[in-house]
Amino acid sequence: MVGVMALSVAALTVSVTGVVLTRRGRPFDTATLTPHKLVALAATVYYGTLIYREDRSGDLDDFERVLLAGAVTLLVVAFASGGAASAMAQPPKWVAWSHRLGSWSAIVVCAAGLALLVFH
Image 1: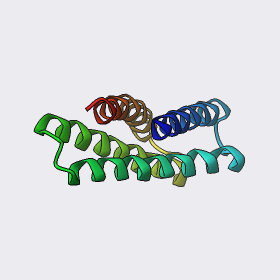
Image 2: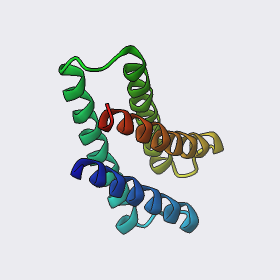
Image 3: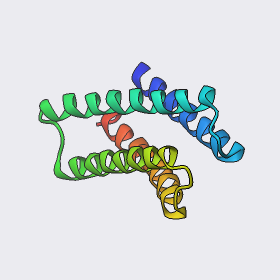
Image 4: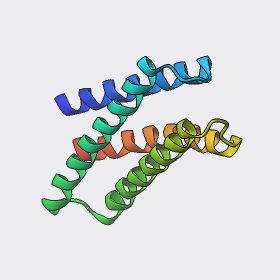
């Protein structure tokens, strides 16, 4: 249960800092960008650890594996597009939109996957 709360706080932190970064625009504030990246990375590693442990126990069925693989894929898209957006001086609009859509989609799908893991 503590893990669910930690991941919820992390998702909220990443969402709020992402909205703040979007509203303020460039140049990105280091005090906001750093927690945005680090909390997202820590939450992703922890989420991956939960998935790995559950998969090793052999309790996942095919639907759950596909859902969790989709969540991980969306997290990779969010990281890659976020890295591209922060590295480029003037990223194309599709990079910013892929980061927004990938990030929000990842939060929704990860929440569904987490619910499956908790209530399994």
